[in-house]
Length: 634
Ligand code: WT7
Image 1 (cartoon, rainbow, N blue to C red):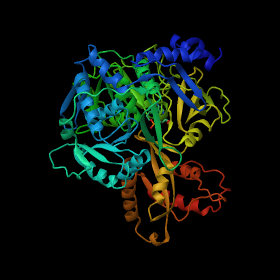
Image 2 (tube, rainbow, N blue to C red):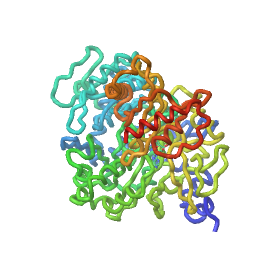
Image 3 (cartoon, rainbow, N blue to C red):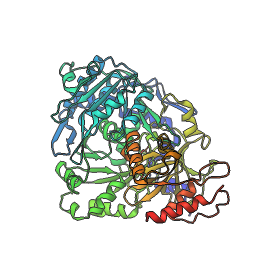
Image 4 (tube, rainbow, N blue to C red):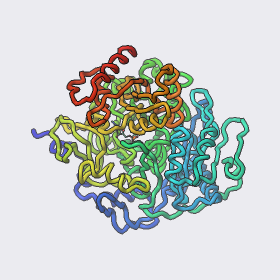
């Protein structure tokens, strides 16, 4: 029998997928009815390569769809958010309470002069107010720009400045592993460098006094106390931006991925349902932080648009004991758990007994996202956590795709799962694996994962940078959307993601641009040159390893001291997630005759592979020096 595409098309494709691929516009027009529209679109898709406009002329409000429409029906008193703090305290917000808070905060923003089209930055850990702030922005047509609370003050300033955010919503303190992190200190440092920023709103945590800067800073509670309780949702055009989210790319500066209202919300809502087959009684826990796209599509917009109950947890999933995650599932009766392979591997290390002490019988589905899951972790997740009762939905997607694009369509049909494969292209997604010229590769061959046609969740563009948008996604392989991931298809048509094809690392499910990290390293006065590569890691998947050469005046200083300083520097400039696991100080880099650093060789040296022919190197003594250092580090 013929394998590859044909096999899937004939045997495994759901009727829904057939419909979607036969007449995409008719299909997506039908699907968009999952939302409440103020005005119906006149055209489903306007595709002016590489710019797509979805549901042209359609009018709606994302906040209305996630909140108002549920309180009109019988979900008014249903739990929208179950929040748990790291210290064990809990708070439940019903849809009605969420509605009230969102309305009031929308008015708070209005009172500070925020208008439709303005940008509001959100720099917060997992607290209910973060969700309220996002939805309040959507309500008044402001564009939210959420910045992960583990990012440094410099990374925060860069994102505020690039998006010209007017207001920042934050908190004074973040709790992590029982320790307090002074978020206000970071914000204060950052705000000094942000000209566009007029105001900062702090959600107070703990009982210390918060020192406010007069005229700039306000306390959430005080502003809420004076707010009106009702704000009409702004009627937005389907193609108005809903949010900006910065992500790492191949060059130094992060990319401001823009998602527009109608297409994005339709796609987040439908993929939420197609992946999990959401039922009204589900308690959905996606452990992602709202600082990442997963936290946008599957903590906030997807589940709330469907009127589901979500769980939000503030702290570390293995604190104070390794069973914290299992305890939360048991306590709140979680039915669907969606987490990352790195988290599974970490919890797996603590051993099965921590899981088995808890009643996890409410679980019906398990999900993973962020990186390929290794079969050993998959099997543990399936048998120990899911008790062999819960299918595992391995969902592949990106900040740019808005929602899942390769995933088992559990809510539509069941497909046999293969540990480590995200299975098939999702509904309405025409994916392929191609060579650099765009030609399909045969089964079991490594190639580039691409998507042939636009889909509603596709990014609208990059904030103020149409050229970079084109170059990053549409010019790599002409005519199609390049994911920048390598993949292969097996004989049964299952897609296996093999990792990034560009200079982006995947560290514990987080995207770190090696170019960005190199840029920060050389911006330190001690460093002359730097090269960063990824090294496989048992728990995190991959960790950054940095090679640096020093400026002459620093050469004699003790290496330990330099290392400490550089680590602190990266912590301050990028944030703790980007800190290299090893820093090598070398006297020269392996370079080609034209002066390019050969990162490929560095990588091979670090992972212990044969480096092969090095005749293109200008000076091979650099390799000997690194080998020597590697010996010393073992
Ligand atoms: C990159 C996107 C949106 C998911 C969270 C990260 C990798 C994501 C999988 C998966 C293998 C995966 C890819 C992708 N990735 N999900 N199920 N299997 N790899 O979003 O920060 O935009 O990162 O994460 O390399 O390109 P992101």
